[in-house]
Length: 122
Ligand SMILES: [Cu+2]
Image (tube, rainbow, N blue to C red; front, side, top):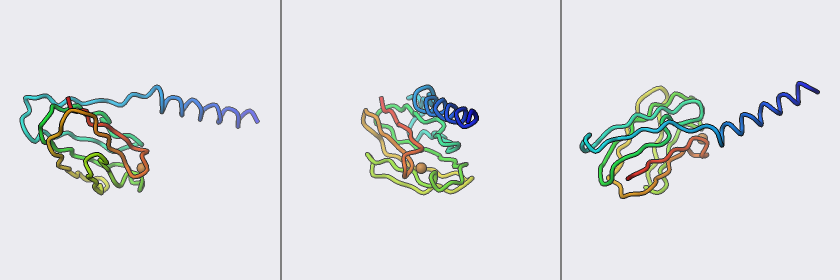
């Protein structure tokens, strides 16, 4: 009985950590990098690393996804606002070309939204 309670408590702590405490790493791409900057995003352990990408306005860029999670959950990435989606190969690089964007936040996520990230255009 005690063990079950401890497992339950552990799960609660994990859920709290996941949703409220954990802050994804962020990457900044500076203006000086010119057109077609490339950002590498690793798809692993339920998170995009980095999950928050900051970019300057009106600059086309590429995201190089490296998927290390074999689960089907990680297989696709969608940018609903941009109507872009792609299938990611396992343990390989996949480069996605994105258009120049206006200021705003553009979410991206896997099919089931377990993996999620944001492109922030400033
Ligand atoms: Cu998923």
